[in-house]
Length: 118
Image (cartoon, one colour):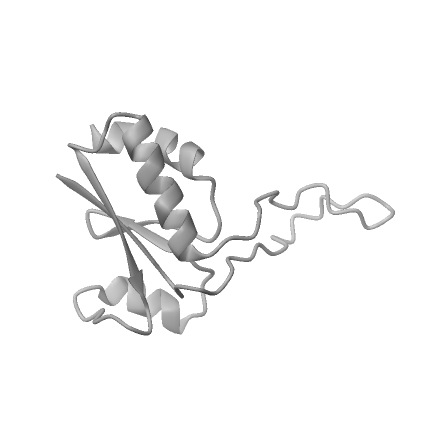
């Protein structure tokens, strides 16, 4: 079974920020800003779990959430390093390997990961 874990702060909203791509127009409009509604890591985990079921992958994939302040992360040293470096949440691992950091759309992520998970 493949294991997807999202690490973050349970009730804090996930935020997106500028990636400094210089894609702003002359008026300073940020046309490149990620258009993801503000939700919590726990809510995003639920969306990803629902996407796994919708894709009929629940027998191949487990999805769980780990709160970085409430759970023992001793077996996830790479994740702890990123937390100490102030990377954006959530941090997502697949089979204990870091795959994504920061906001994402659950359906798009699952589509990107399908080859890895099958």
